[in-house]
Every structure is written in structure tokens, then in C-alpha cells.
Length: 299
Image (cartoon, rainbow, N blue to C red; front, side):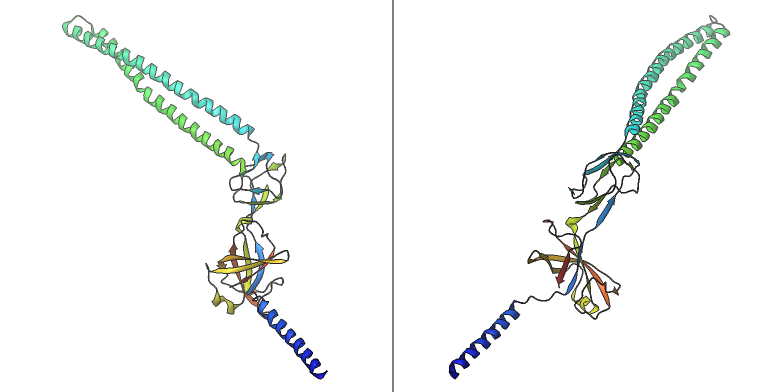
């Protein structure tokens, strides 16, 4: 009986010992720093004021950079644009008329030059009077003066064309500014203004979270700074249900100034009062990560 009892005790102790060793071997390496995932947020507002005639997104929608989010009323601008275009279309017609008048005058001027030469020959032979010479010279001078007016008239029309083109470009810029575009890829996290409300520059229409460009913000002690550097690859972990997911991250920023430990952030050394913020880029193409989720990192 004593031998069996002793053997049983030995087996039980061995089992507990082996279980303890197994548990130690399965323990994961503790994380070096803890924090929360964050994403850059963009408040998108129109560049011009007016009535919002169209709002193309809802809360939670995914958008790509350049997508149209909303439209501001452009009725007045379109009417002004059409008016300017009509004025521009008239200028080539006016220039054509000026050119036609110039050609007619040049033809008359050639005739007057011939008549002047003929009258001059007659005057030299005594067949024409001084009065006739004065008359033809007067006509010739008047025709030349009229001819000199065509150049400034053409230049004035060209200047008018340039002014109209500039005004049209300005209105087209305003028409472009009436379209509210997504500045980045992301997710609509808030719809601030509704269709039918008045928009104005600086007043947000929607809020976009750049969820694909998410990053983990953690805090490290001064002793840990020597272990890390910008651009270095690290291992990032986060919970997904009952499992732990690991992803590769890359350090994008290390604060140069220490700050007091935030109350909601743990550090490896609990007694450390001053810590340094570190931001780590993490790929989020699968969109599993959300802003505010907890995460940790191993350097």
C-alpha cells in the first residue's frame, strides 16, 4: 500500500510539473507597448457657398478619393457662363466685319492713289488745278487716317476676348468648386449637412475617416527609445473575437518630447511617469481595424 501510494503521489506531482512547464512554454511574449488604433479624420466642406442640391453619401459609406460627395446649386453661375459665351461668340463676327471694312477701304485707297498720281501728272502739265490737287490729297489723307483706326479696333476686340476668357475661366473654377469631392479614400463617419440646407466654405458637409491608412499610437519609456527607430518593422497585435491577430507595422513617428502617461494607456514599466508617443502604420486593406480599437506592439 505504501509503495502504491508513493507512486501515485509521484505521478500526480510530475503531471502538475509538466503542465506547469507546458503552460510556461505556451505563454506569449509580453507586449512592449500598448495603445489604440487611430485614423486621420477629414472634415470636408465646399469651396463656395450655396444651396446643397445633391448629397450622394450616407453614414458608413465607403468612398474613394475624387468621388463626388455633394453638389452646391450653380444655376446662377450657369446663366452667367452662357451669357459670357454668347458675348465671346460675337467677337469673331465683329472682327470679321472690321476686316471686311478694312479690305474695302484698302481697295478705295488703291484707287485714290492711282487718281492722285494721275491728277499730279495733269497738274504738272497744267491740265489740273491746285484745287483738284488739294481735293485728292484730302481724300487720300482721310482714307489713311481711317485705315489707321482698324488696328486699335482689332486690338480692342482682342482685349475684350481676353477679358471674357478670364471671366469664363473664373466661373468654370467656381462651377468646379461647387462639386464637393472626397479628398482621400475612407469611410463616411458623419454627415453634418443635409440636402436642401445652405452650405458655406469652412462649414463641413461630411466627415471622412481614412480607415485604410490606420495607425497604432503607443507610448514607450525612455529606456525603450534605444530599441526603436523610424522606418523599423514591428509586430502589432489586436484581438479579433477569441483570437489574436498579428500584423506587420512600420514606425512612422517617434515623439521628440516626453509627456505624462495617459490614464487609459498601459506601459511596460508601470512606475514610469514620462513616456514618448510612437505612431506605427498598419495596413488595413481588409478593414478589420477600426479607430479606437486597443492594440499592442512588440519591437
